[in-house]
Length: 342
Image (cartoon, rainbow, N blue to C red; front, top):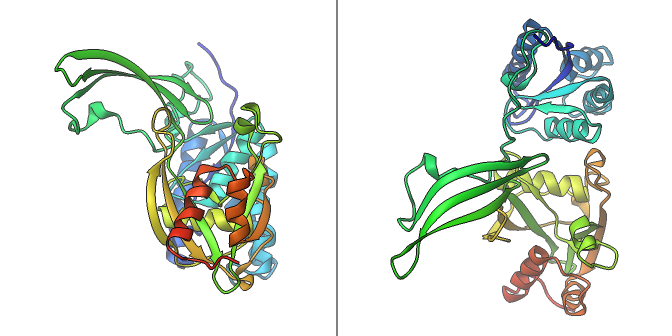
């Protein structure tokens, strides 16, 4: 019988997300994390929550309004300081940018990340089965729902890799146009669905873009791997318009309101499941609420570029902008007369 050392586990879940800062909803979120912590304790582990440490300090320091300087000074920094001292993170509850940041930081520090209590090794007894594959949310097993195509019969789904995202091998029978059936195998990479947005200032004729290093482009021959792009990111369980507002503030520091849906596209349908939601949204100089630059714990180091719309279009012709989603948004804006070209 294998005996496992108890783990110190940070329970990460939503605190303010989706509450509108309603005290009852805030308390309900804390209760969800405390219930998970109790279950961890009863399983022989040492649970911790950032809220248990941060909220008493915030109250003692005199913070009465969520979002004030004392709250921001203490709340998330407490959890960031805890991560290096913990053995693992247990992600619970619904959408939360802060909790997702804790997950990213844990992975960056080489810590284990779990999404259910049943995935954790017990503090005593037999070794548990390996953790279930992570579910980024972009794969629906066709065997579990009614068929949407009579010419396709999925017979097997095999997980090949479940590291950062999930790579699956799918075996299926396909009825060809001549009526014959053929057995085929395809690999599908599930990284979840995403969103992107064209930030535009019509009064000044400018767009707000980003520039960052992209390893896949670099290893495929791009000179330096630094790509100019529209802000974008994964949904991570959020509604697309909420996710893109979060990503915009993280990457550019700009806080936007209403976003305009443009279209939804599959960007690489031969191998990647991702469906990308495209938006457009206005911004002004006054809507910048933070520095931006991305989430450092995820390795992001993002530059913010404000360009005249006409210059951005010229960069497509010159090959300086070669990111597909960005070109699609800029050409959409040109076709619809969203901005004047100077």
